[in-house]
Length: 464
Image 1 (cartoon, rainbow, N blue to C red):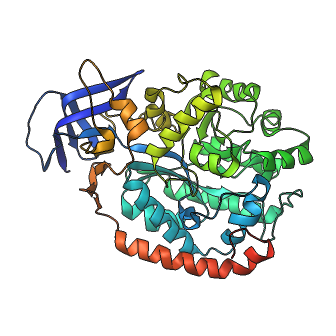
Image 2: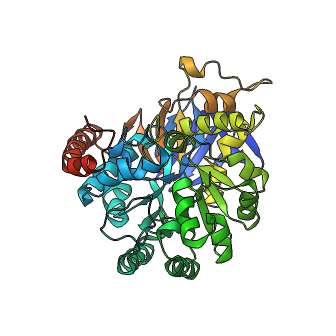
Image 3: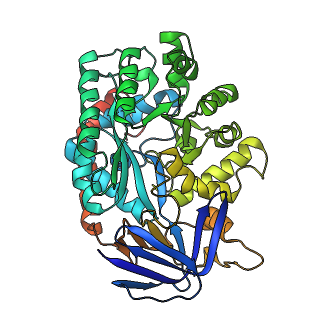
């Protein structure tokens, strides 16, 4: 069992309803857990001693909703009307993605996000068993994942028409989800956990959706699902059921504390209250949704309704899969949405990528803060850069606002996950950065060549 001692650190961590700062502080790690934390210039022998003088230590950041393989589609899902987004951008390309494409895309995304401090990936994708085996497992990251379940067959879809469901395709994807939970949940010393991932209420029948809920309850895991994500979904729901998504989910008794609802930007304040009061949790993806839909996830409104909210980077977000930039987008856009600069203060936002994100995914007893007994998931930042200067920690403090509003993620120098050093001096020890970048470039070029005719058929704006 490896021991690590971090000394001379400025430690920032959520603790109960406050942000606790230790300066100077120390952290003791035995194996995969934190065994001690405190103030002062303590010293002790350990297998590895890290002198973090001048550095800031934070809990590892949690990305509550991410589609890692879709990093290959970066720059190809924006600047189009909402109704055309899937039909003319992602859809024609995703249909041509092979299993190896999904894996190299996931590698690229995990590498990028790691380097900006993400340690837990709440990943949502097809081929998740392969992604776990070839990406999350060897990279050393923590992953809370689901495989996509919908009732779509191989045919092409147009969001202007009601989707046709294929029950046999839905059953196969459901069985894939069951197998993922059986094979992976709790594995690798708890580093891998699983959920069920029905894609959205408009993409499957009521029968399959309720079957997923029943199985999730049986297996004791949560449901991670896109909910009320825009006009495309609303048209499908009203056309099929005559109800909005939240109204429909309430009518079939689907909304409860087991539901993690992603997006929710097409929900009314009253519907957000229904979700919050039922114990449902919310994930907002401000960068991606601002770019794709031109709207702001209603994070403040949901929190005001009593809900627990967290942040995700989603797919192909501006500034990449980077939770520092997602914090900044969430804070600023919600202030603008409400025309109130006091909305979503920096401390609230910081908790939405640490302890509240852990609560959202039912992982708060394990991660989300730096506390004795929790898993040793930590990041070290080196703030001696112009954009983070000055760092004030005396009677006047600016640490949290500086991290939320000014950090880029490039300040992250070292990462520890599950007690293992994953990145040191900005070198990811578990991944070959040069090789992954080269493979991703080559893969994306071939994927676009393979997708050309499908993109041409729908007159995609990304063609010359």
